[in-house]
Amino acid sequence: MARVSTAVLWGIWLATVTGAAWLTSSVAAMLGGPAAATAALTAGGLVALAALWSAASSRRRAWAVAARGLLVAVLGVAGVFGLLGADAARAVATRGDWFLDGRTAAWAAPVREATLEAAEVVVWAHRRLAGNRAARDLPSGAEVATPAPLPVAPSGVAGPGQDGLRSVGAVASGGAAAPPQVGADSGSNEQGGLRSGGTGPLGGVSPGVAAPDAHADDGEAPPPNPEGELLLTNRGGELRWSDQEPLPEAGLTLIPAAPRGPDAAPERPPAPIPPRALGWPHDGVVRRAVARITDAAARTPESLAAAIMAAASTPQERLRVLHDWMATHVTYDDLAWAAQEAVPSDPQDVLTSRRAVCAGYARLYVAVATHLGVEAVYVVGRARKATGVEDHAWNAVRLPSGSWSLVDVTWDVTKWTSGRTQPFSTDYFLTPPEIFGVDHSPEDARWQLRDAPVSAVGFLRQPLTLPVLARHGVEWVAPDRAEVAGARRVTVALRNPHHRHLLATVAPAEAGPDARGTQCGEGSVAAEVNLTCTVPASGRHLIKVWVGLAPIGMQTLAALLWVDPGV
Image (cartoon, rainbow, N blue to C red; front, top):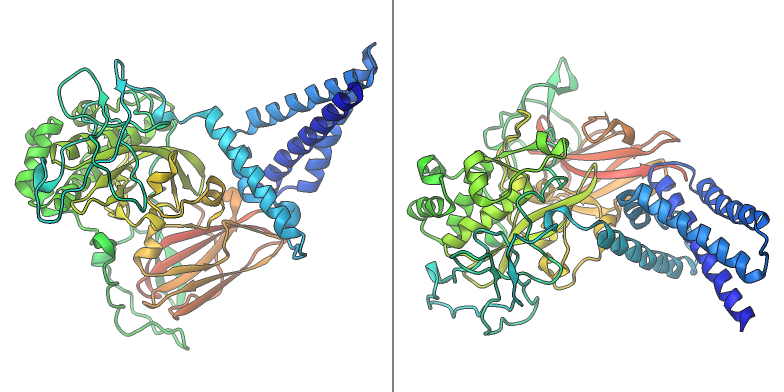
């Protein structure tokens, strides 16, 4: 029996040492460092520490040696996890299979699958241990009730709320409701609620998705970097990136050019892309109704809702006016976020201060939408950007048809407390789930609104394409992951049926996401585009894909791809 126990201890020790080496080597691979050497150093270091401890101890029985070795290994894993945290989780998800780069043998596929399953466990453990700042605590005195789906009113039959929509949701406390049952009919039970002790409608709270308190929103994901648009000009026959402020596409003036060859630009800008479901992509122009909402009318969630109802007649249009008003009248407090200062997220506080971070935007949207008679909920999750993955909060809204859609006002804002600005956007208003889900991952996978939800590892491994790419009707074909390793020459394949102008640039990854980089060859307006970049032999690099209406004019950042030429 003792021999069996000792063997089990040694087996666990070996697995733990291997896990620690895997964690550190994956981080090294993600950063473009020597993964194999890092794995060897980690494993060797843990073995050496265990051996030194055993040599200094008077008890040298086999089980005691194994136990000490296991303790050292466990502490090593805990230390790696504690030191690297989110980087370790992201690394094993994106580069945990670094040792399989270039492997095409039959055994490689099942080994990669097992590796990714292990990565799922690591990502899950990190999320549980780290928590989510956007869902840190429930409001004081809140009582959580079990949520249930609401019945959908039959077509043409008005429900209890405005325009056939039931008035539910978290008004003052910004709670979250039960996720929809994807692919199933709604039930007939009453909605469970989050009772905050005051008057007003009820909002449900799903298991594992808590409403934020008024100061639980520091550290969440800020809006994407606003410096994502460049102007490509033709000066003296040479293409140059311009430092002047980019023009919005609606008023774009193209600089004349005469490109030659099969990829020459059309004589006129391409025709607009046919609208998708729910009107996405939207027009990207602030609704005129926003200008009719006075400051006096926007003092409380109730008065703001009343002003919106007077200015817009349909539920979807009211949601759009609310989105546009918040995106242009509430400033994102990036200074407080950078300083890790708490920013009040109570809807009334947001309207009073006119500044917020993600929790404030999401809670205010729920509060006002509820008074509009629209069911809106607070969704907690994580957002993915060029700089990493961070805690975040956004909204889901239930439309007159009974279906759900997704909104993130935070990422459509136009101004920051630091003085930075960006053009108004509707990229994250009623966005199709497959587009929204590229950079948003909810804690509860049902809020992905997909029949086949993407796993946590799948979310991190998928290419980082921005909504603007889909807005131009461009489809990403290859590579099929966010990071490419083991090759200096990388080709990005795209389908471009609307003949947008596509080009790529490459820059060292350490230069940061704002670095413009060097253009890779010529751009293209062909229906099938292959953009090839050659990166230096060493170091991690970032390939950026840009899209525009024509070869000369504004080019907008549309996708990012990390490349490590050697492991």
